[in-house]
Amino acid sequence: MAFVTADAVHVSIDTTRCQGHGRCAIIAPDVFDVDDSGKGKVLVDPCSGKFRAAAEEAEFSCPETAITVASSFI
Image (cartoon, rainbow, N blue to C red; front, side):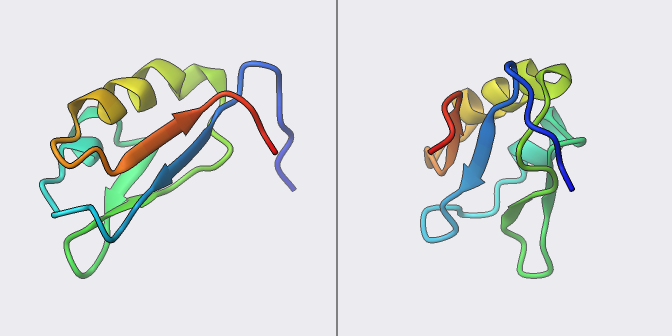
């Protein structure tokens, strides 16, 4: 069971947009990895505040804008 804290964020990758550059896994290896098909995958969601800055940097650095980091949970 994961506990969601106030500084946690929801992290997702749109695999239809991901082209497998792997920048996310390089920038935030505690949050992202690359799957067997070479596309990015999320390792931890929700993502704690400890990794928030790295997740946001990966979102900003994704050339396909396939990563979403959202602070609100629905």
